[in-house]
Length: 220
Image 1: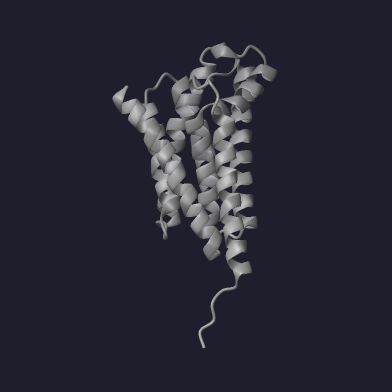
Image 2: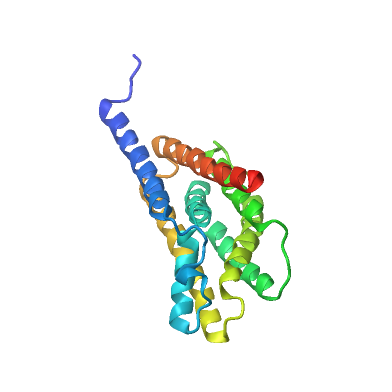
């Protein structure tokens, strides 16, 4: 005799999917502010360590594209089951990207590649099976260079103390957001059928955010 899943099972899976969607949506709504110029303190260069740290905390959050990406890599890390290797790769590379900007070296079309990274990683999250971890970490590292390059704009000309505090601030907030997304996905059971489907829907949503930003960059 065939046995069908109970109503409680379906309800449990739906609840998990809903929670994942709620987490993603809440994160995106919190970022949907008019301050999309990506510059805390109205674009003023921080002049002390406190301002530098607060600016570093704010930069990845007030930019919806940056925030969406960090949420995505946290969720993707949980789905792939390799710990926090992907977010760590991204954060370290973002520090290097800021250094590239401060050394007056240029990366081509940073806004294009930042938007494209959100689209790409949202699509990776939406896949039933992701590529090898090394490939994803490599892509995260490449994305980190461009995201970090954009972060560097806010501290050009800053003294060493606010500069170091800024680096600490944006590294801390990025890891914090990624770890939070990772833990939520883990607690919901990232590898169970119901939650995996919910995370794939989240991936489609985040890919759509990336596509919207990318179209804005391309179309001007």
